[in-house]
Length: 518
Image (cartoon, rainbow, N blue to C red; front, side):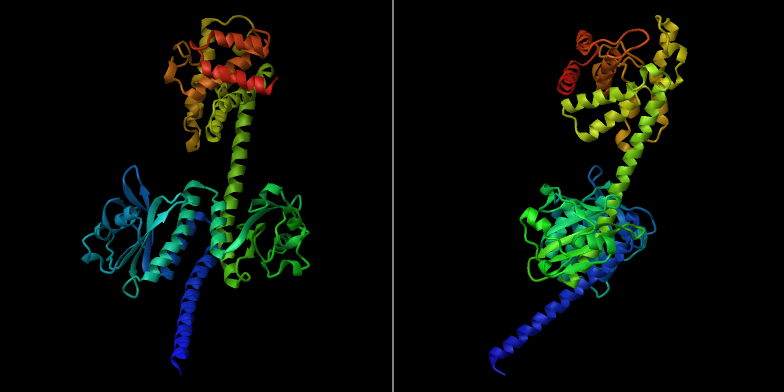
């Protein structure tokens, strides 16, 4: 055999060996993906993913540390084999801290021979660490949020390819931690990463609307501006949604099931398609995940396995989004029922809470409030008079001037509101609602009630509700006065601007009113 031929054979053998290693690596990822597909509970997914990472890298155990920047500590989000609860270590200590601060892999064969090693965890757990591989975990903005740590390689030491595997697995952990801790829908990021991983041109997620018999795009790269909906009776995606089976189309225009009309509408040319169903916990199809146009060749079996593995994460995100939306709708409907129960005490004031909420939200938008802030404000506004459930109907409906005792009784409604709302379990973002809702009768000069707060002592959102409340009361009929015109109401508000009511809020109400009601 000549020298050139021998070199070619050697190169071929090297290539075969490289492919073999790559196939083994891919098989490990597919194994992880397959296991993940079978588990939909986010809190159980993390241990499952970590166990499979340990298995893939042949480590004895693995741990995921997250950073608490306020306390400058690393704490265990999950620690395989740990039965002693959460562990916290100082951020600047040990090999893990070095990995986090340097944003690099730390790979040590003999931990106790390395002066940087911190044996505190071993002392607390009774475990003996030998080899350590620590890889930083980054969020979408490339900020370090923690580290994944693998301990005691079963073959003695972690190698270079183990480092590469660990780095490729950390994005999965980052996505999962985000989903668990923030209930965040990071589908766009997932699909963007998928497109890069599979090396295709476009990636789309369609959700199923059974009642209308369509698939509508949640994320549809390249066609979002066309407002496209897919019929279940046409095309590859519709067929996958109906059958619940994967489809891999090598040449779309040679397949009679392919619907050309989207290409005709968008001017795009579809060549190859890989489409898998998205299923909920019960196995029902809730959508499809579709990738289009493999950049080189056609979609492989490995591409399909990766897509199916990712579909589990997408399903969790979609289900969480649906549940979150349903929860919000339920929460809002309960609030509206509570508000209606107040209005039901007196037909004359029916709708007062909803109108105040509408005006308050309009003011907030004029002031540039963000959507989450407006949500808190609307909850407080809806419930601002809830304490009136404890107010006597005789006093509420009295047409003559109130006695001092009756006026004191009326004022008690803000204290009742605060006490009732403080007993309700409210999500973290709504923790200030009891104070905001019960402060809408406070005035800048301290003449309000129930606490006599002044100026900056009054929550700003309460100041908004105060203006909205006075405006609604002035422009609506009451037992003690007829409804006045908006112009007259604004004149009355202006008289109290800067002394009792916030001037900027009054001006914002004017802008909102004249932009929307004239």
